Image 1 (cartoon, one colour):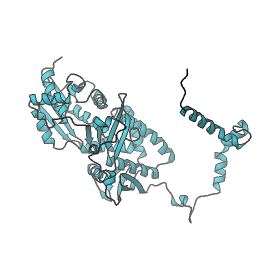
Image 2: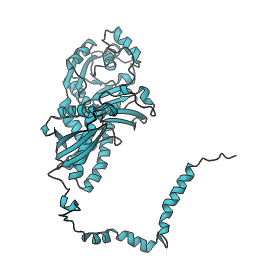
Image 3: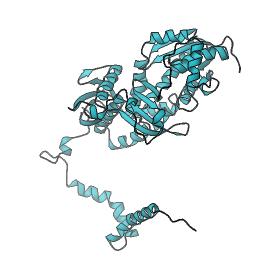
Image 4: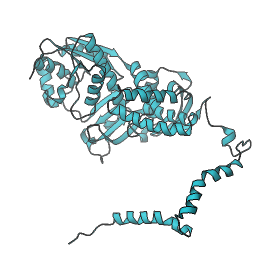
Length: 432
């Protein structure tokens, strides 16, 4: 195996077993001087402790940074404004964090005059793609090394033995039943018994959300304020993005809101059963959609839904730093000009429901919507509208006679479709 004596490699470092072992392995096996880079996105905790552990594991230098505010302002909020939910459910917590960590990694490599960077992703997941593509977009001259993808090839037990041999502090002594990643925007859990898509997730899977059957009995209402699609306050009190998300994670989790159990399509071509906990993300996406429904036109809502899907795919697939993202982001920002107002949510035993919304830019007009006194809608205009709108239908009916002589013919299409569906469902006899 080629060695890089005297070269510096900057490693994306979480402080866990894999990356701690990677520090020593990169030094011992490949001859690198290792500098670690750690960004706190809301789950790292004591950055000083992480820094000390990296040095103790053999790093020449350990760079740490509180990146929570950057994460929320430049990654989470744009994705929220876009309405980005992968396969209409996953709020992309891990996927949004990776491009920021990759940027911090590149910045550290530049400051250390390093030509190599490394990460601890495996060769089976999505994160390897996200790190590699982000580094490639930001610094195509850097070489990416992924020890877990090839070279280290250790089981967890072997990593523990390796760590002890090299004097690296190891907290865990037996394999955790799950693989977990978390940041401010959500918690991702997979592996172990969760790999059976039929099996109910055990209680110990969930750490942020209460069992819906055990939450407080009285429902709870809260009010979220937005300015141009960005959440800025809770219950009339202005809050920073980090604090608002933390508060909603606690409140939503207390009422069992934010659990997501889904089978998703990974970028590498396999289906994976994933469990997510994201109380704040679920509540904010729900509130933001409700406010958009009040202030955006029908056409804008329809097209933005398509953009949201494209945006989510792009983020999930690791293409944050791409021209395509810049183009979509420009459209999304334009749609948010009037997404300012308040939304009231009701939390009750694992569910959240929109029970109120208001905005100075609302397109909802009571005088047009009401059926009571003060109705300003011109009912007589509907006759002419229906005449024009229905013209193509009537023209086709007269010239092509799709339904024959009577209305009974209109039942033929659904009847035939239903018959064909029933026939397919019947058990087929084996041919002799």
